[in-house]
Length: 107
Ligand code: TYC
Image 1 (spheres, rainbow, N blue to C red):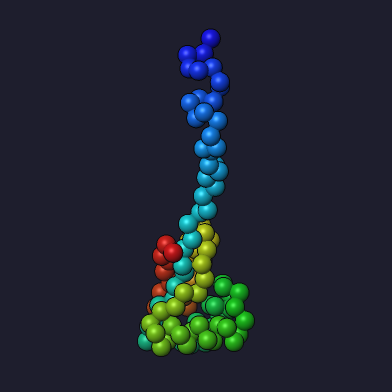
Image 2: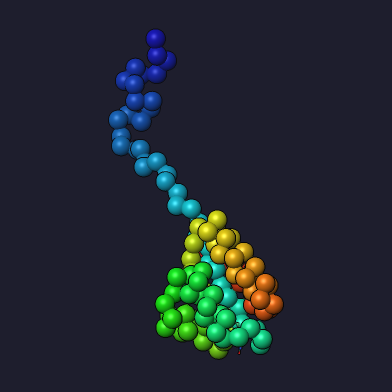
């Protein structure tokens, strides 16, 4: 035996109160390159082609933006992908003894 009014609506009297189940999108992260005075421009262009899938013209333009403005967003990714990109860039720069810095930030 039910303790309520037995209409089986759990007290909502049949009103359409249901909301769509939350399907939360995962947060996105901006990956940024920072300017410095020592990393060669061609090296930065190469990084953008190799790790971020840019063509040469796109890579050159982004590199120039970083050079002139101090930094630029080079891509937006899930946390795991962003983390991997940052690690790949930092490792590649370190192995070539360039001080290039790559960081990520929640969008
Ligand atoms: N400023 C550097 C130079 O004049 C070039 C450079 C561009 C360095 C972008 C880092 O993220 C960078 N050689």
